[in-house]
Length: 607
Ligand code: PFF
Image 1 (cartoon, rainbow, N blue to C red):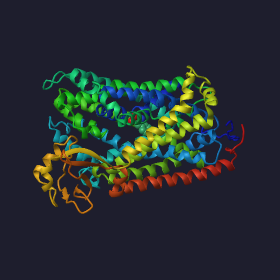
Image 2: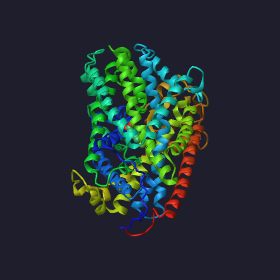
Image 3: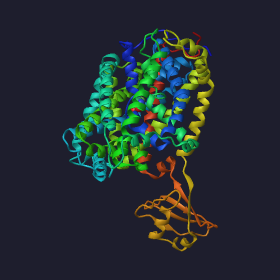
Image 4: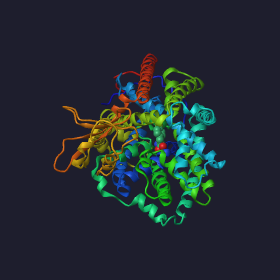
């Protein structure tokens, strides 16, 4: 298709990057964030350590970098036609009235991620302050740090953060919120670019100081730096057979590179027509990889291992727990820990701001060009929406359920979907021939031809397969074989609290089943097997009919869909996301009518 809408009265925002290094640092600033220092090490350690690097680099080369080039190219092209926001850029790429609505996903992802990311950003600053005052130096007592974290984030109960004593940390959150909006208000080059130019080198310097300290830690209870690095990097090739490892790797690449978020499309639209996109895209991705693999991969887990030994899988599981719960043990026990703890959390805070401002810009750009609003008006509207969302996350703090629900459905599921939409827009609608031509205008480097073919044929299929497997694995509930308990235990599968012997037998299974306090046995009925259910009637395990080896036990892995249906706060989070989507779709509809009326967009017209 070689049609594109005319953009007769181009009405560019007037915003432009001031320098080439500035835009590269701004994109790298968006990419380098909590994902590099917290999410990557946890993901890698859990999914085969060194072996994780195989699917990780395959995803980087097959998905990450090609899609990053496609986004840079489409973004600059959209900018040339007078649009900065995803609904506008997508309409230029695909001159069809439906195109703009896909832009809703590209606005929604950064908008919703901002609502919880800014909170974690404030935790980082809060932790840095607590190191500065010494309040977080509690020696080596893991329970003390866990309880500090639990209270600090209000994980115990909804509304806990508004309790007296905790409220002062909300002021830190307000401050962080204001800082983000101040930067955005100052604009693309005076705000984002100027800030990233200073923040990126500061971040690198702080991370290097912490790295040097970690590599000179010496021995602790017989574990040294080499053991720490070995724990992080010794490959476990078995894990490569598990599809979950491949899913985790590609999810990590997207999250980390800020690809598939609609951000690069927006940032690239502020380039000048002849500015290079190929080398800039590659440079910012490489910078991100340096921060992720060389700094993120060498600090967090090796340090935690030296001081604590093998980490509990639950700690690794939650990307954020690692930094906030495991590392304070390390800082508490090492020489100079208070200063290093402060530098570490302050560095994370800086890394997080350069990412969070990038989440606001695409939406601001949409309000400005969709409704002709001035910057203060669009910033005020966005401030109101994000404050509501953030307030929602702050209030429903129990078990961080809302944060987790947003992170899963928007920070993982929707990213795959948007990456898929963008690869189809580029490969099949914009066309790889035009894409290749456009990408090379002003380029300082040539993209090998096969990358274009990959973008058209391999990327969408790879994404579709991964997306399908991801949903199958995580969205739906599964009953998995956990092993068998001895036949003699049949007598203990009677109504009521499980016996101590049964609890022990469940803990000894090949895949141990943990029995939480308050769980009970529901005895077998005529047509139903005996089951173990939690206090809240949540299914934990099923006992099948005995065979030669014993009584097979199936452990119940709760899928995300079941969580939504059973947990009120998760359900409210989904409803909230649905409302945001509806709001964006209506806004995009109105903006689209305006663009057509103003003659900025003409559907189906050849250029
Ligand atoms: N890439 C960022 C990180 O690694 O922490 C996260 C991020 C940035 C997510 C921008 C979403 C976004 F819009």
